[in-house]
Image 1 (tube, helix red, strand yellow):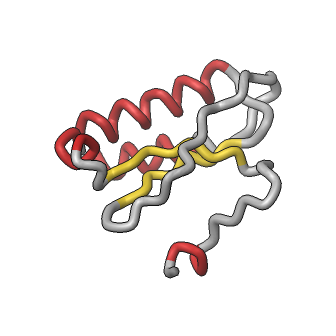
Image 2: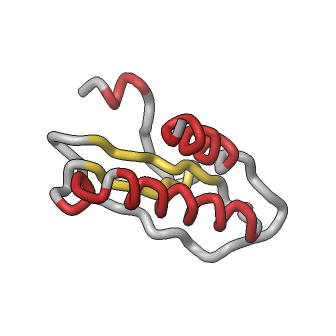
Length: 94
């Protein structure tokens, strides 16, 4: 049930809203033996979009606290308009 709620929250975060927000942090390190939780967003983000991101981050950190501490689960915020960004299913298989 928690995974489903988290998944829904992440999907809602993909919807762009009409207000400009500050630049989101973006992790640069890759997880070689673990899981990357990717939160994708566009350039236009409202307060609700930012709150959904924070709630998703909080849920990951609460549910997977041990794995986060060990670096096996990493939450990353990804702006889909970042030049040269490539997150596809093919890239995930590498």
